[in-house]
Length: 370
Image 1 (cartoon, rainbow, N blue to C red):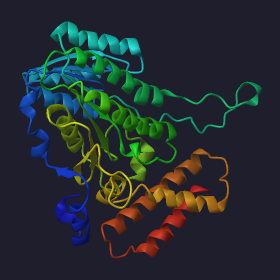
Image 2 (cartoon, rainbow, N blue to C red):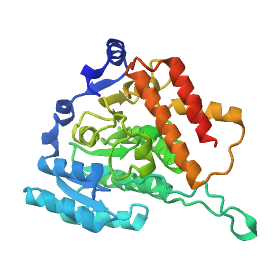
Image 3 (spheres, one colour):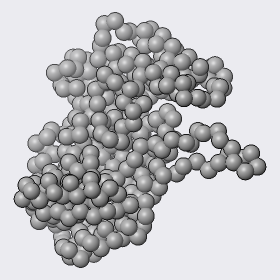
Image 4 (tube, helix red, strand yellow):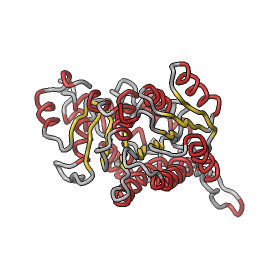
């Protein structure tokens, strides 16, 4: 959503939000700082990681591009090299500590130092947490934990190794870590407990490391995108958000670039939504009417907190019956309908008022418990 698409009321509201909107020019303003810097990027085989790697290399960075899919990350490196940049591809399973140690060792053995680390690798919710399959003794089977292994443990491994190598870097110039959060670092996504938990934890990791990074001369920032059309967006989610404004890959990459390239930029949450890049400083209020939660909800053209309304309505219906593939499909449609209603109301559609939104919300909630 561009500024020109906002209503006068929304424009006034946007201008009063905490933090600052960052233009493309502002995000790329310190690009020269990456010249000659050694940049380690996980999940560089596609999406944000690939695009960031290509952009960083175009400004003179020496990129160590890693991904669990070697063919995919090699394609990223081939693109960089063909354009005259410097990059090395390596396979890395971020959920495996030794694999990450080897990735950083490759960077040190090749370039002697590490200057920037982007902990980008991540996956969406791996299905199975809600499965009611029983194992031995008719007890529930252990749920799949790959989402947490990659998004949380893997990212924490990357951050730990980044901290170690950046502290050993004798440079007094640019040294930075960029973590990848999500809108679900703040709001729980229905049917995605492992993803939501892992991304909530990334905010905790960021907030804790900030206090240790500052005296060590290390910048640390976290990028938190709204739904974005990348490979991580599952088919059901694509259906649920069909027709709604999404964050762009370009804006997300610009946010990562800002967090990695500006020597004076640290301790910031970069919220990315359809309106662009919103920078929230570490000490900004995060609760209340003037806080970050409200800012993020208002900037996005619709609100994830509406799901809380769904939850309340569902509670009135009592416990839902056991799920099935058909019911899950219906739930997805119901969420999509409610999200569309929220979006219509947010952008001031004349045919959707508060009563219409509540009505459609109740209808969607009803669908969710079928």
